[in-house]
Length: 366
Image 1 (cartoon, rainbow, N blue to C red):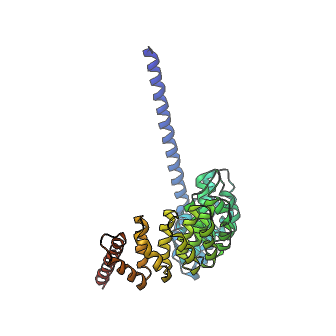
Image 2 (cartoon, helix red, strand yellow):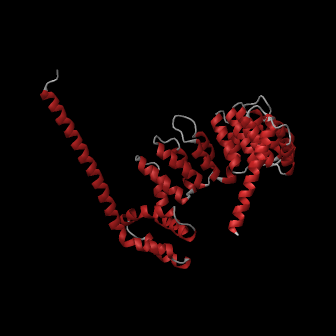
Image 3 (cartoon, rainbow, N blue to C red):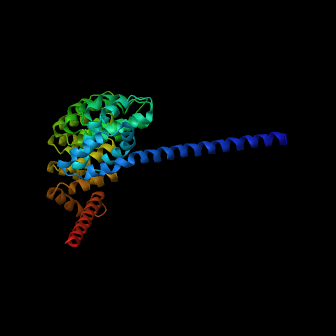
């Protein structure tokens, strides 16, 4: 048996460890509070000047900018977190003034330099500031941070690259979804869609990447950004890609793009024998495409053994306009026990409820 003395000694050691951890926690909190209050005290004399800059008329801003640009480095270091926080909350003339203040202080260059800091916190904060400034020259350095050992730094770099507007980031963002240090695909897609039309050629090049996830993210971004000039390449991916997830995203993208190139591969994708998930997405995409030529094939799907395929086809027919609605009404008059009849009636009832709701909302608005 363990002696009482050993047990008491162990308890004393445990209490000592708990006490030490409590003291360390209190010390860290106290130090953080002290630094915050010290920073607020140093920045207090010029915080009013910053507010005057934000409220000043355009012809009066230069005076405040000059005065803020001349404050000592210690004061600027205390004020800069406040300026960075305001950048994400203001727009128009006030935002232009804050960006101009950063330029006058050379703070953007300092942030670029901090991207190479040993401190992950400094790297992440520098990336955030550069994103607020939409500082395009920082794009190459930010691309390197997509492989940073710290996950939060990688995420900050991806968000910032989406704000810089530089298409040079596209291949780096696409490749960041794979490998040992990754960025979540949804975050990469959001960053890519923020880059706009300049990113389309590089996104289209991503459709030839050997990694299926890269191809899927590239197609998703092309669809969200409305890259109609790339519809033939997306259609080719739907026809030929070997990965089912890529084909599903290609079908969804073709529905968003709304180009005639999407009709043949989408019609081929709803045939029986194709993967159910692909058939469902393709049927919905045909409804978004609005092509009357899809009326017949979608009507045939109303009696599909899979209720999700049949239901999606019924709702897609409603979006085809009079031709689709006519096909639904004809199917609704069929045998009551037929699956196609039930699907058609359900879709028409859902449409009627939606129309009634819109009419009520319209009357309330009036």
